[in-house]
Length: 231
Image 1 (cartoon, one colour):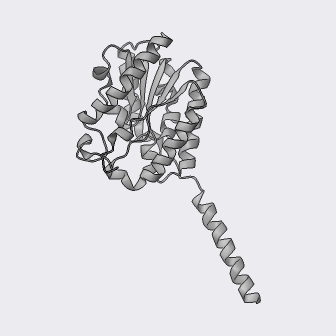
Image 2 (image 1 turned 60 degrees about the horizontal axis):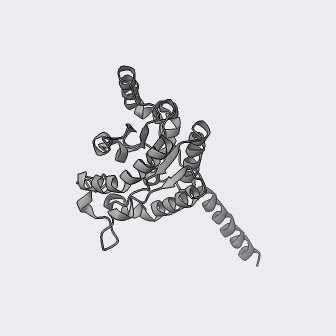
Image 3 (image 1 turned 135 degrees about the vertical axis):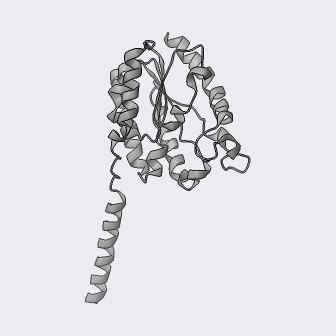
């Protein structure tokens, strides 16, 4: 009887330890790995003027590869995407890639790399809330458009967590008139419910021009409407 109780107690303790371990946060990658990219932004801004109250595209490689100036030629666009970024990196370099531009609209894509790096949905969502709270504190009139993590073949095994994160952000944004959620993820799925690889580069991770055409078509009317109201 005593042996059985000890065994049961050990099982309970091991379960608690496993749960505690599972809930531990994954360490953020070193943001200084982007030192060169951030310095390039600084040098560009030192040599060129940028529009006031612009539409700021911010986030990871899906933003960086987006030919946003060509896609929205009639709108004042600034692109500050850097490949491989986590939301934690966006917070670390907040003053350099967001705060200095006094944007009227922010188009944001990030979180993809976070989940793929093993961060939990809770951890990534907490980072998202911290960043949006920071932005709304500094720019109470800004319109923040979140583009959900896209489904891609190369990261399809993470899609369950990514989709859960997207749903959390959608529900969270719906509670604030300054936060928007624009579904640019579902249109990238084929009739079989899996990513349409014809919309992606050969790496099956980043969008090709056809994929960006879809994003442009979805985003354009939203940008025009929000920008005309705010300006």
